[in-house]
Image 1 (cartoon, rainbow, N blue to C red):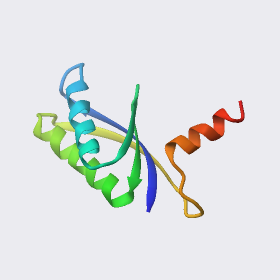
Image 2 (tube, helix red, strand yellow):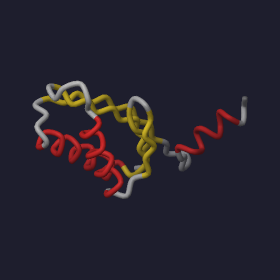
Image 3 (cartoon, rainbow, N blue to C red):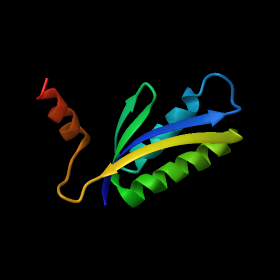
Length: 98
C-alpha cells in the first residue's frame, strides 16, 4: 500500500542539538529508496507501507546505537485506495486553488 508519512523523530537525553541523529535517519530513508522532503520539524516520506516502516524502525535502532537512551516519534500518515497520489500532487492541488 502506497502511503505518505509525516515523521518527526526526537532523540532525548542527547543534549540540545539533534541534527547528527536526523542526518543518520535521513541517510537511512534515502538508502531505502524512499522519496523524502525534509522540513523544519520533520520529514515527509512517500513509499510503500512495509518499506517506510522498516526504514523508521532502522532509524530508531540507529539513533539508539548512536547513544540516545530515549526517542519520541510522531507519525502522521495517509493512504488512498482510489488512486495514486504523490506529495507533489497534494501540494499542487492546494496551490492551484490559491
